[in-house]
Amino acid sequence: MLNINHDRCTRCKICIGNCPFGALSIVDSFLEVSSACTLCGACVNVCPFEALHIERKQIDAEELRKYKGVFVWAELENGKPRKVVLELLGKGRELADQLGQELNAVIIAAETDFDPADLGTYGADRVILCQHKFLDTYTTEGYTQALSAVIAFEMPSVVLYGATPHGRDLAPRVAARLRLGLTADCTRLSIDDDGQLVQTRPAFGGNIMASIITPHTRPQTATVRPNVFPALKPDPSRLAEVVEFPLTMSRAAIRTRLVQSENLDADDQVGIADARIIVSGGRGMGKAANLEMLNILADQLGGTTAGSRIIVEQGWISHTHQVGQSGTTVGPQLYIAAGISGAVQHLVGMSASKTVIAINKDPEAPILNVADLGIVGDALEIIPILNQMIEDDQNEKS
Image 1 (cartoon, rainbow, N blue to C red):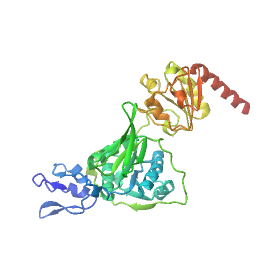
Image 2: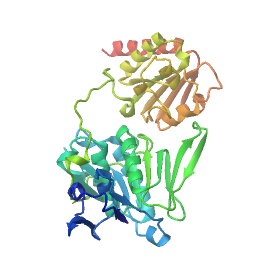
Image 3: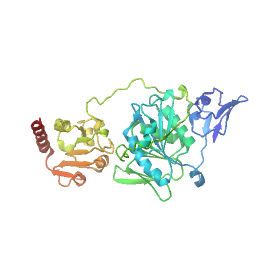
Image 4: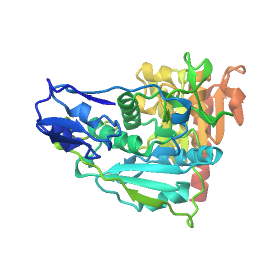
């Protein structure tokens, strides 16, 4: 329930202007809350006098059954869904079918550059469109208020986020506001015999896989790294129902504004999360200067250069190009690992690759166990030969 400290309340009405459901009003000079309140927490967050407090009780089994539906936060980039959204819709479709419930996508934005109904082609039954002029760029406060309001009103059973920089910021804020459990960086999701979401993620440096459930709170929430699950093949005949979610919001609720953005990764290569071909180097490359041969190979193949954690820590390559548990999870069509031994943390980050070619001097290197083609040899000798063979082949064709 929402508790009001009338001694602290000054009737400033900031909370009234931020309540998405019109549940607050001044009656006989006192702030009152109506039955329309969903405990979304928007009023608590904006009150400058700390006069509002939400008291939450543990949900019993009967109450848990009222929460239905699988929700995916459909994060947009340049007005269109990010690739991880389509991947989550594919997995969400599977989970929703197992639960016998709907799959919903939630769009939070000022405007979109695509038809939201098109998310139905990737598995969504319904798209909840939450638009407001203050949501033109991502802000923690604005998006937390919007998504918390949607969740409090719709009462979904499961909410999934992409483990992007924004997803990793938003998910814990919403979980904290609504007092929910959250499992980060999941690599597997399933439904157990009791209808609970089993969230599996690496733990203890990737040495074990922990399966986590949240039996006492709803919704069950998780972030999932990009390239972990495949997106469904789009079905053009399937469109989603689009529902507009009315949102009340004031500028006072958003304390941050985007003044300027700059791409700090100034090279011309595609980001490794979206690359179809990745040429990745490790300690076996010897020194930073030797990465140039990997750049040449990547350019000839139309791919992107990446690396393991050790060469990032040594400053040979930027962190934005790190593959692994503490870097980026990738799923290219072709992954070439040169001089990478294959620590479990690295293998977690590239296990979704369609084809893996590994080059390593050590015949016992773990990377060779997961490779489709393993070459036992010195990458410093093999990569130049490979580059020359590709160059000669291209010259013959021209």
